[in-house]
Structures are given as C-alpha cells and as structure tokens.
Amino acid sequence: MTRSLLARSCALALIATALPPIGAADVAPSPGASASDARPRGVVRVEQGLLVDAGGPFWAIGVTYMAAPWFYKFDRARLERDLAFLADHGVDYVRVLGEVGGGFWRGREIDPRWPDYESVVGGLTDLAFDRFGLRVQWTVFGGVEASPTPADRQAVVDRVVDAIAARPNKVMLLEIANEGWKNGFEGAGGREELKALVRRAAARLGARRAGLPVAPTAPPSAGCDDVTAFYAGLDAQVATLHFSRDVSGPEREWAPIVEPIRYRPCPGTPAVVANNEPIGPRSSVESDDDPTRLVSAALVTLLSGVPLHVLHSRAGVRGDIDFASLPGVAATLSELQRVRPLVPRAIARATPVAADTPDALLELRSPVVPDIGAGPGVVAFQVVRLGEETLAVAVGVRGPLSLRARRVLSLEAHDLRTGSVVERVRVSAGEVVDLGGSDAWFVRARPDS
Image: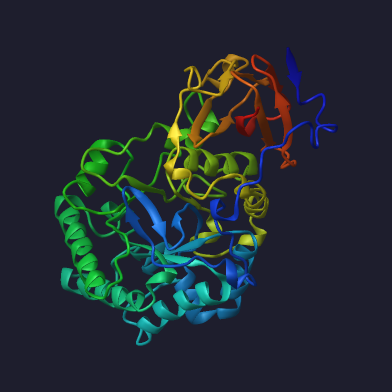
C-alpha cells in the first residue's frame, strides 16, 4: 500500500494517532525580546562530549554579527533594532569580533585601544543577554592591525577574558581568531601562538571559575590535516569549523548544505563542533539566500551531531545592510522558529542510523543520487534515533520522497519548502509513504501500537 501525502495534504491536518508532543524540557529554548523566562540558564560547558548548560545538553542557532561592538559604541539604536529582530526570530546567540580594522573594515573598526574597550565588551554582552536573551560568541581577532606584537595580542585576550568572566552565563564560547591562518596568525608560528592564547584564556577563565569553551580558530578546511594542525594536543573543548561553500560539483547548491554529514571528529580534536560560518545570504565566495536550503542546512547540522549552527550573511559582517532588509534572512529565521520545537534539546545524544539497516524505522525507497542532474532521487537522507523516536531530514529531493514503514508508526512530515504545518499520519508496517512537491523534508516517526 502506498500513501501520497501530496495528494491528501489538505485533508491530513490530523489523521489517526498524532505523535505525542515533546515535553518542555526537550525543546531548545527560544528566547524573545520579551520572554525573560525563556533565557538560557547557567554557564556553557562541555561534559562527556556534549554541549551543556544548566538545563543539560542543548543546541543553538547563532547569527554572525561581527560589527556589533562598533554599533554598541557608535549606533546603539541600530544595534538594538537588530538584536530585537534576531531575538524575535528565535536566534540564540550572536557571533561578534573583538578587534578588526583596515581595508574592508574602514569605518567599522573595532579597536582595543578605545579607552572604554572593556565597557564595550561587557556592555554589549549584557545588552544582548539582559534585554534580548541572546548569548554572545566572542571572537577576539578578525585582524591584528591594532595589536601588532604577541604581547599586544596577549593583552587584548586578557581584557576580553576579564570582561566576559564577570558574566560567563551570557557567553556561548570564546574563539581567539576568525580564520586566524590568514588574519594575523599565519604559518606554523601563528598556529603555536593561537594555541598559547587558548591555553592562556582557558587558564584565566578557570581561575575566575568561568570555565567557558575556548577555541583557537576555524582552520582552512574541515579536513583532518587542517583540523589536527590547529587542535591536536590543545585540549580545546569546541572546534569552530567553516565548511566548504563550493557549489561546482554534482550536488550543486546542496553541496554546502550536506557538508556536516561527512564530518567526523579527527583524532585528538574536540567532539563538539560549531558550524561557524556556512554559506548564507550574500556570503563571500559563494552565497545562498534560499530559505529552504538554509533551514535544511540547520537541520542537517543538528542531525549530524553538531550542536551549534550559525546563519552567516552579509548583514552580519560590516552591517552595511540590516538583517530585516536582506533577502532570505527573515524567511529563514521564521521557518526555523516553526521547525525548532520538533527538534529535541538533547539531539546531540541521538545515534545516527543508516536508512538501509533493520534498525531504521523508515526505509528509504528513493535512490540516493547526489548528482542533481541525474534524475529522481535525493542528495542526502540523514537519520538519527533518540530513544524511541526517529528523526530524518531529506535534501535535494527530485520526485517524491518515498519511505517505507518497517512497523506501525506515527509519522510527521514537515515540508521545508512551503513552511507548511506538520502532517500527521499513522502508517502500517510495510506501508509506503510518498512525500511529493518539495525538495526538502523533515520527518519524525515513532512506534505506534
């Protein structure tokens, strides 16, 4: 028996037994500008390979907002409008720079020589969290124009650490440099300096009982040679990675979306990873403002065991355009708000499941064909199990997504193209469900009696 949800989508608001709602403790917090009780709680740390705070394991959606310290000092009203927009759209944290200048950044310099520099670091962190429920990821160096010597850079790290150590619950993590290998920390000597700064920052935070995760930088690629060069032997707790944005291969625009599926922690490197700067609206090199793919990217990240996903856009770099005006940002964040209650807070505990094994509740009948031009199929189908529940995301779908139930199941299917409400059906063992009309789907299933 085959059931087509495309043909019956209007009638399937609720059929038979729906999946039980996820309990409040299982849903990742969604802060809002006015929802103070939804603010994250406690200091972020890594325990047993999981990102945790006072509420236990969690995942979070971040947004690049590199120039935020400049706006805090020179255009507070604009900053507050942006933070309100992000908080109202369910963002959990912002990723900002502690120093940058010269060239592209002229007119938006963030300078540690400001006499009120510590007040800017602390004040921005307080404003983001206290007013808007947003944690801050501090990336100290976007460049070293104002800190030309190692001693200068040590001093800047110390000042940032001291400011955030006074308010550690408001910080997501500390990163020493943004792509440091090309922004002031070149070569083997630069790598060693980054590692020394990580150790210095971690020790200084620990002495103040503010043991936040500290990462050196995103290496040139997510390949093990590069990751190991920056992380092995460092005892860092989180790796900040910049996955490839290349769209020239057979997967085309879906290639950057599925990069986290392929990543496996390299020997001696952190188990916890941040998808720190993926392809996004008007990002450099290659960009993508399609909400379907950007929402899919977040879900692929989370179901790949990566608990931090950042929406990276042109609006979040110099801030020459605001977030609300940039195509793709509002629609993407709005759809993520609709999807996020479906993803358990502890998704990082989930176990990956191959869809062609008996352990999988759902058998994928559509062929996995990464070549977009090769006819019907899917680019990728990522499946995990958490307790009795199975969660899956299918991307790059051409034709129907065909799934076969291996037992009686309650099933929800969320169309990531239209942002439609979740369809709920009860399917019999052996029944095939065809999901049509979208190139990306999010599916949840659990055994039903």
